[in-house]
Image (cartoon, rainbow, N blue to C red; front, side, top):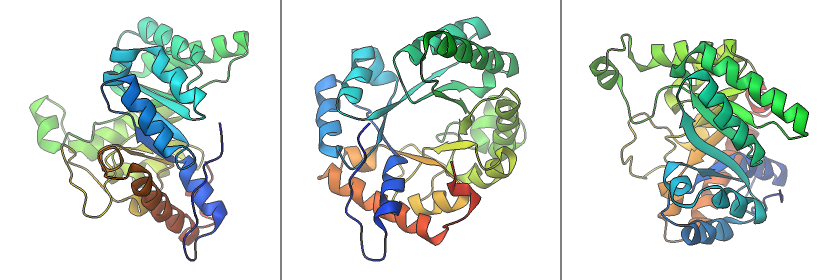
Amino acid sequence: MSHPRVPAGPGVSAAAVRWAARRLVVALDVERLAEARSLVRALSGTVGTFKIGKQLFVAEGPRAVRMVQRLGGAVFLDLKFHDIPETVARATVEAARLGVRFLDVHAAGGLAMMARTRAALRQVCRREGLVRPALLGVTVLTSLDDADLRAIGVPGGTARQVARLGRLARLAGLDGVVASPREIAALRRLGGPRFFIVTPGIRPPGASRDDQKRVLGPAEALRAGATHLVVGRPIRDARDPRTAAQAIVSDMAAAVLAARGRAEFTV
């Protein structure tokens, strides 16, 4: 993967900018490969990782992953597997064979599902000489709030449910979790300094929330202890996606410098 090249702003070191650019994940939530390719090319040298979700993967399949890789980017395959343990384990093994950097499963699938998946990934990567992807547990979607959880029979609210699922993911040996910005600090305390916390629901100042209910700004999320920030519409729908991404990276870099030396930034 090529190293992102983002201009450093006043008072922001080039090293901090590189650190931040590698941890900004841009969601390729588009219909077709040509649209995704255009966005990846526009952001080349600015962003290190791209998220491929259900829409693009259903439309284009593994060739979307290969396209990002050919253009020098890493891939977060965000398919949120949730099924019986053997089915999820087999699916994640195939994702590992695609060479993705991150992939995720729903932590609500349970301890046995996550543990079986982790074991299968380790086994196949060791046997086939693959680089093992970081396996993440999805906690509670950022589109849900306490009322939504009550409606489906989950008591205690979002914060408590995220903590429950985060503990399960940790116990199962997962590398980290996907969670909203509002739960980052509690998850950092729970997971320790080497635990990935990948955070969607990131909205720069002035951006629309769209269907996200639990959001935070980029700098605030990093200060709370997030390791990677997922941004979609504020970059994808911007008049100039590259400039929008650079502004977010600069904001992240300033937060990194302000918190230099803290354990949250060691992952």
